[in-house]
Length: 340
Ligand SMILES: [Mg+2]
Image: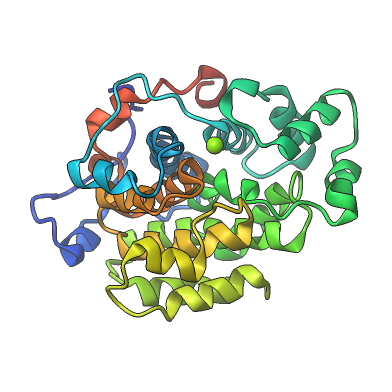
Protein backbone atom coordinates (compact mmCIF):
# COMPACT_ATOMS: atom_id res chain seq x y z
CA UNK A 1 0.00 0.00 0.00
CA UNK A 2 1.57 3.29 -1.09
CA UNK A 3 0.90 5.16 2.11
CA UNK A 4 3.29 7.43 3.93
CA UNK A 5 4.93 5.33 6.60
CA UNK A 6 4.63 8.20 9.01
CA UNK A 7 0.86 8.27 8.92
CA UNK A 8 -0.54 7.81 12.41
CA UNK A 9 -2.01 4.63 13.76
CA UNK A 10 -4.71 4.18 16.36
CA UNK A 11 -4.36 2.22 19.51
CA UNK A 12 -7.17 -0.27 19.17
CA UNK A 13 -9.61 -1.02 16.41
CA UNK A 14 -11.02 -4.31 17.65
CA UNK A 15 -14.35 -2.85 18.69
CA UNK A 16 -16.20 -1.32 15.77
CA UNK A 17 -18.89 0.42 17.79
CA UNK A 18 -19.34 4.12 17.15
CA UNK A 19 -18.36 5.20 20.63
CA UNK A 20 -15.40 2.87 20.81
CA UNK A 21 -13.97 4.17 17.57
CA UNK A 22 -14.40 7.70 18.77
CA UNK A 23 -12.41 6.83 21.86
CA UNK A 24 -9.50 5.39 19.88
CA UNK A 25 -7.31 8.42 19.78
CA UNK A 26 -4.53 8.92 17.32
CA UNK A 27 -1.03 7.89 18.27
CA UNK A 28 1.65 10.00 16.68
CA UNK A 29 5.28 9.22 16.27
CA UNK A 30 7.00 11.47 18.75
CA UNK A 31 3.95 11.65 21.00
CA UNK A 32 2.36 14.66 19.30
CA UNK A 33 -1.39 14.95 19.60
CA UNK A 34 -3.79 14.77 16.71
CA UNK A 35 -4.70 18.42 17.03
CA UNK A 36 -1.20 19.82 17.13
CA UNK A 37 -0.72 22.93 15.00
CA UNK A 38 2.78 21.84 13.98
CA UNK A 39 3.07 21.78 10.19
CA UNK A 40 4.07 18.11 9.94
CA UNK A 41 1.07 17.01 12.00
CA UNK A 42 -1.27 19.30 10.07
CA UNK A 43 0.04 17.82 6.84
CA UNK A 44 -0.46 14.25 8.03
CA UNK A 45 -4.08 15.01 8.89
CA UNK A 46 -4.55 16.54 5.45
CA UNK A 47 -2.93 13.51 3.79
CA UNK A 48 -5.26 11.07 5.53
CA UNK A 49 -8.25 13.08 4.40
CA UNK A 50 -6.80 13.36 0.89
CA UNK A 51 -6.72 9.56 0.78
CA UNK A 52 -10.36 9.42 1.86
CA UNK A 53 -11.34 12.05 -0.70
CA UNK A 54 -9.49 10.47 -3.60
CA UNK A 55 -10.71 6.93 -2.95
CA UNK A 56 -14.30 8.19 -2.67
CA UNK A 57 -13.88 10.23 -5.84
CA UNK A 58 -12.36 7.37 -7.82
CA UNK A 59 -14.92 4.79 -6.70
CA UNK A 60 -17.80 7.23 -6.94
CA UNK A 61 -16.77 8.06 -10.49
CA UNK A 62 -17.51 4.47 -11.45
CA UNK A 63 -21.11 4.89 -10.37
CA UNK A 64 -21.51 8.30 -11.96
CA UNK A 65 -23.13 6.94 -15.08
CA UNK A 66 -25.35 4.38 -13.36
CA UNK A 67 -29.05 5.17 -13.16
CA UNK A 68 -30.62 5.60 -9.72
CA UNK A 69 -32.63 2.48 -10.45
CA UNK A 70 -29.43 0.45 -11.02
CA UNK A 71 -27.49 1.85 -8.10
CA UNK A 72 -29.23 -0.23 -5.40
CA UNK A 73 -27.87 -3.31 -7.16
CA UNK A 74 -24.28 -2.06 -6.78
CA UNK A 75 -24.85 -1.05 -3.19
CA UNK A 76 -26.64 -4.22 -2.14
CA UNK A 77 -24.02 -6.47 -3.73
CA UNK A 78 -21.04 -4.24 -2.97
CA UNK A 79 -19.83 -4.49 -6.54
CA UNK A 80 -16.32 -3.09 -6.79
CA UNK A 81 -14.99 -2.08 -10.20
CA UNK A 82 -11.75 -3.57 -11.45
CA UNK A 83 -8.62 -1.48 -10.95
CA UNK A 84 -7.21 0.93 -11.77
CA UNK A 85 -9.67 3.40 -10.29
CA UNK A 86 -8.89 6.72 -11.88
CA UNK A 87 -9.48 9.81 -9.83
CA UNK A 88 -11.27 12.83 -11.29
CA UNK A 89 -11.10 16.64 -11.12
CA UNK A 90 -12.14 16.60 -7.46
CA UNK A 91 -8.91 14.90 -6.45
CA UNK A 92 -6.81 16.70 -9.03
CA UNK A 93 -7.75 20.09 -7.59
CA UNK A 94 -7.45 18.81 -4.01
CA UNK A 95 -3.89 17.79 -4.87
CA UNK A 96 -3.13 21.42 -5.72
CA UNK A 97 -4.50 22.52 -2.35
CA UNK A 98 -2.45 19.85 -0.60
CA UNK A 99 0.66 20.90 -2.51
CA UNK A 100 0.24 24.57 -1.58
CA UNK A 101 -0.35 23.75 2.09
CA UNK A 102 2.66 21.43 2.08
CA UNK A 103 4.92 24.07 0.57
CA UNK A 104 3.53 27.26 2.12
CA UNK A 105 1.53 26.30 5.21
CA UNK A 106 -1.45 28.41 4.13
CA UNK A 107 -3.43 29.32 1.03
CA UNK A 108 -1.50 31.67 -1.22
CA UNK A 109 -4.19 32.46 -3.72
CA UNK A 110 -1.98 33.32 -6.68
CA UNK A 111 0.08 30.18 -6.17
CA UNK A 112 -3.02 28.01 -5.84
CA UNK A 113 -4.64 29.60 -8.87
CA UNK A 114 -1.50 28.93 -10.90
CA UNK A 115 -1.47 25.31 -9.77
CA UNK A 116 -5.16 24.83 -10.63
CA UNK A 117 -4.45 26.19 -14.11
CA UNK A 118 -1.21 24.29 -14.63
CA UNK A 119 -2.71 20.97 -13.55
CA UNK A 120 -5.89 21.20 -15.62
CA UNK A 121 -6.37 17.75 -17.13
CA UNK A 122 -9.19 17.47 -19.63
CA UNK A 123 -9.41 13.72 -19.13
CA UNK A 124 -10.55 14.05 -15.53
CA UNK A 125 -14.06 15.33 -15.97
CA UNK A 126 -13.76 19.04 -15.30
CA UNK A 127 -17.02 20.90 -15.77
CA UNK A 128 -17.36 23.23 -18.72
CA UNK A 129 -17.26 26.36 -16.58
CA UNK A 130 -14.13 25.26 -14.72
CA UNK A 131 -12.41 24.28 -17.93
CA UNK A 132 -13.16 27.62 -19.52
CA UNK A 133 -11.97 29.51 -16.46
CA UNK A 134 -8.74 27.54 -16.10
CA UNK A 135 -7.92 27.82 -19.80
CA UNK A 136 -8.27 31.59 -19.56
CA UNK A 137 -6.01 31.56 -16.54
CA UNK A 138 -3.49 29.48 -18.46
CA UNK A 139 -3.58 32.15 -21.16
CA UNK A 140 -2.59 34.79 -18.62
CA UNK A 141 -5.97 36.01 -17.41
CA UNK A 142 -6.32 37.40 -13.89
CA UNK A 143 -8.22 34.88 -11.79
CA UNK A 144 -9.72 37.64 -9.63
CA UNK A 145 -11.49 39.18 -12.60
CA UNK A 146 -12.26 35.92 -14.37
CA UNK A 147 -13.79 34.26 -11.32
CA UNK A 148 -16.02 37.23 -10.48
CA UNK A 149 -17.17 37.57 -14.08
CA UNK A 150 -18.34 34.00 -14.50
CA UNK A 151 -22.04 33.49 -15.21
CA UNK A 152 -22.67 37.09 -16.26
CA UNK A 153 -20.95 38.55 -13.24
CA UNK A 154 -22.43 36.49 -10.41
CA UNK A 155 -19.48 34.14 -10.02
CA UNK A 156 -19.94 30.38 -9.84
CA UNK A 157 -22.02 28.67 -7.18
CA UNK A 158 -21.05 25.21 -8.37
CA UNK A 159 -19.92 22.53 -5.94
CA UNK A 160 -16.32 22.69 -7.17
CA UNK A 161 -14.94 24.70 -4.28
CA UNK A 162 -16.35 22.22 -1.79
CA UNK A 163 -15.33 19.09 -3.71
CA UNK A 164 -11.62 19.71 -3.20
CA UNK A 165 -11.58 21.29 0.25
CA UNK A 166 -11.60 18.55 2.91
CA UNK A 167 -7.79 18.32 3.16
CA UNK A 168 -7.74 22.03 3.98
CA UNK A 169 -10.26 21.50 6.76
CA UNK A 170 -8.14 18.70 8.17
CA UNK A 171 -4.96 20.75 7.88
CA UNK A 172 -6.34 23.59 10.00
CA UNK A 173 -8.50 21.41 12.27
CA UNK A 174 -6.66 22.77 15.31
CA UNK A 175 -8.04 26.26 14.55
CA UNK A 176 -11.63 26.53 13.28
CA UNK A 177 -11.35 30.29 12.67
CA UNK A 178 -8.49 29.54 10.33
CA UNK A 179 -10.49 26.80 8.62
CA UNK A 180 -13.24 29.28 7.70
CA UNK A 181 -10.82 31.98 6.57
CA UNK A 182 -8.60 29.67 4.51
CA UNK A 183 -11.56 27.82 3.02
CA UNK A 184 -12.99 31.08 1.68
CA UNK A 185 -9.61 32.03 0.21
CA UNK A 186 -9.33 28.69 -1.58
CA UNK A 187 -12.93 28.79 -2.79
CA UNK A 188 -13.10 32.25 -4.33
CA UNK A 189 -10.36 31.51 -6.85
CA UNK A 190 -12.92 29.65 -8.93
CA UNK A 191 -16.21 30.16 -7.07
CA UNK A 192 -16.81 33.84 -6.35
CA UNK A 193 -20.56 33.49 -5.69
CA UNK A 194 -21.36 33.52 -1.95
CA UNK A 195 -23.11 30.14 -2.24
CA UNK A 196 -20.01 28.56 -3.75
CA UNK A 197 -17.92 29.94 -0.90
CA UNK A 198 -20.48 28.90 1.74
CA UNK A 199 -20.41 25.35 0.39
CA UNK A 200 -16.64 25.27 0.63
CA UNK A 201 -16.66 26.62 4.17
CA UNK A 202 -19.30 24.11 5.29
CA UNK A 203 -17.44 21.08 3.95
CA UNK A 204 -14.07 22.29 5.24
CA UNK A 205 -15.55 22.78 8.71
CA UNK A 206 -17.15 19.33 8.48
CA UNK A 207 -13.76 17.77 7.80
CA UNK A 208 -12.12 19.77 10.58
CA UNK A 209 -14.78 18.75 13.08
CA UNK A 210 -14.42 15.10 12.09
CA UNK A 211 -10.73 15.29 12.99
CA UNK A 212 -11.51 17.10 16.24
CA UNK A 213 -14.23 14.63 17.22
CA UNK A 214 -11.80 11.79 16.77
CA UNK A 215 -9.48 13.42 19.25
CA UNK A 216 -12.05 14.47 21.83
CA UNK A 217 -13.85 11.14 21.85
CA UNK A 218 -17.22 12.68 21.07
CA UNK A 219 -19.62 10.65 19.00
CA UNK A 220 -22.41 12.83 17.63
CA UNK A 221 -25.36 11.56 15.67
CA UNK A 222 -26.19 13.10 12.32
CA UNK A 223 -28.32 15.86 13.75
CA UNK A 224 -25.68 16.85 16.30
CA UNK A 225 -22.92 16.75 13.69
CA UNK A 226 -24.73 19.15 11.37
CA UNK A 227 -25.55 21.31 14.38
CA UNK A 228 -21.84 21.65 15.07
CA UNK A 229 -21.06 22.78 11.51
CA UNK A 230 -23.90 25.29 11.19
CA UNK A 231 -22.54 28.20 13.29
CA UNK A 232 -19.51 28.48 11.01
CA UNK A 233 -21.48 28.72 7.76
CA UNK A 234 -22.57 32.12 6.41
CA UNK A 235 -26.29 32.70 5.89
CA UNK A 236 -27.03 31.20 2.50
CA UNK A 237 -29.13 28.66 0.66
CA UNK A 238 -26.44 26.16 1.58
CA UNK A 239 -27.08 26.86 5.25
CA UNK A 240 -30.85 26.69 4.75
CA UNK A 241 -30.37 23.28 3.15
CA UNK A 242 -28.25 22.17 6.08
CA UNK A 243 -31.01 23.17 8.49
CA UNK A 244 -33.42 21.08 6.47
CA UNK A 245 -30.95 18.17 6.46
CA UNK A 246 -30.57 18.45 10.22
CA UNK A 247 -34.30 18.22 10.75
CA UNK A 248 -35.10 15.31 8.43
CA UNK A 249 -36.78 12.42 10.22
CA UNK A 250 -34.63 9.54 11.34
CA UNK A 251 -34.56 6.46 9.11
CA UNK A 252 -35.80 8.33 6.06
CA UNK A 253 -34.72 6.29 3.00
CA UNK A 254 -31.83 7.95 1.24
CA UNK A 255 -33.40 7.24 -2.14
CA UNK A 256 -35.69 8.80 -3.09
CA UNK A 257 -36.82 10.56 0.11
CA UNK A 258 -33.69 12.26 1.41
CA UNK A 259 -32.65 13.17 -2.12
CA UNK A 260 -36.05 14.68 -2.83
CA UNK A 261 -35.72 16.90 0.24
CA UNK A 262 -32.11 18.09 0.05
CA UNK A 263 -30.70 17.04 -3.34
CA UNK A 264 -27.79 14.83 -4.35
CA UNK A 265 -25.60 17.10 -6.44
CA UNK A 266 -27.41 16.40 -9.69
CA UNK A 267 -27.65 20.18 -10.18
CA UNK A 268 -23.90 20.45 -9.47
CA UNK A 269 -24.53 23.50 -7.31
CA UNK A 270 -23.21 23.93 -3.80
CA UNK A 271 -26.79 24.30 -2.57
CA UNK A 272 -27.81 21.03 -4.17
CA UNK A 273 -24.76 19.09 -2.95
CA UNK A 274 -23.42 20.24 0.41
CA UNK A 275 -26.52 19.71 2.62
CA UNK A 276 -26.76 16.11 1.39
CA UNK A 277 -23.04 15.55 1.91
CA UNK A 278 -23.23 16.69 5.52
CA UNK A 279 -26.34 14.57 6.06
CA UNK A 280 -24.53 11.52 4.72
CA UNK A 281 -21.21 12.16 6.49
CA UNK A 282 -23.04 12.79 9.74
CA UNK A 283 -25.13 9.65 9.37
CA UNK A 284 -22.19 7.35 8.57
CA UNK A 285 -19.39 9.20 10.33
CA UNK A 286 -17.86 6.09 11.89
CA UNK A 287 -17.93 3.82 8.84
CA UNK A 288 -16.05 4.78 5.68
CA UNK A 289 -17.27 1.90 3.56
CA UNK A 290 -20.91 2.37 4.46
CA UNK A 291 -20.62 6.13 4.02
CA UNK A 292 -19.35 5.69 0.46
CA UNK A 293 -21.83 2.99 -0.53
CA UNK A 294 -24.78 4.88 0.88
CA UNK A 295 -23.67 8.17 -0.64
CA UNK A 296 -23.27 6.48 -4.02
CA UNK A 297 -26.73 4.96 -3.70
CA UNK A 298 -28.24 8.44 -3.82
CA UNK A 299 -27.07 9.03 -7.37
CA UNK A 300 -26.45 12.55 -8.64
CA UNK A 301 -22.91 13.93 -8.81
CA UNK A 302 -21.56 10.73 -7.29
CA UNK A 303 -17.82 11.21 -7.68
CA UNK A 304 -18.13 14.58 -5.98
CA UNK A 305 -20.50 13.59 -3.19
CA UNK A 306 -18.32 10.54 -2.45
CA UNK A 307 -15.18 12.70 -2.55
CA UNK A 308 -16.62 15.11 0.03
CA UNK A 309 -18.10 12.43 2.27
CA UNK A 310 -14.96 10.29 1.93
CA UNK A 311 -12.77 13.18 3.01
CA UNK A 312 -14.89 14.06 6.03
CA UNK A 313 -15.34 10.48 7.23
CA UNK A 314 -11.64 9.69 6.77
CA UNK A 315 -10.89 12.46 9.24
CA UNK A 316 -12.95 10.60 11.80
CA UNK A 317 -12.11 6.94 11.14
CA UNK A 318 -8.48 7.31 10.06
CA UNK A 319 -6.50 5.64 7.33
CA UNK A 320 -6.90 2.20 8.91
CA UNK A 321 -10.61 2.18 8.29
CA UNK A 322 -10.43 3.01 4.61
CA UNK A 323 -10.34 -0.46 3.02
CA UNK A 324 -6.75 -1.14 1.99
CA UNK A 325 -8.01 -2.86 -1.13
CA UNK A 326 -9.77 0.32 -2.18
CA UNK A 327 -6.63 2.40 -1.74
CA UNK A 328 -4.59 -0.08 -3.74
CA UNK A 329 -7.13 -0.03 -6.56
CA UNK A 330 -7.04 3.75 -6.83
CA UNK A 331 -4.31 5.03 -9.10
CA UNK A 332 -1.24 6.33 -7.31
CA UNK A 333 -1.29 9.96 -6.29
CA UNK A 334 1.26 11.99 -8.27
CA UNK A 335 4.63 12.92 -6.83
CA UNK A 336 4.27 16.60 -7.77
CA UNK A 337 1.65 16.98 -5.07
CA UNK A 338 2.75 14.72 -2.28
CA UNK A 339 6.56 14.56 -2.36
CA UNK A 340 9.26 17.09 -1.64
MG1 LIG B 1 -15.19 14.80 -10.60
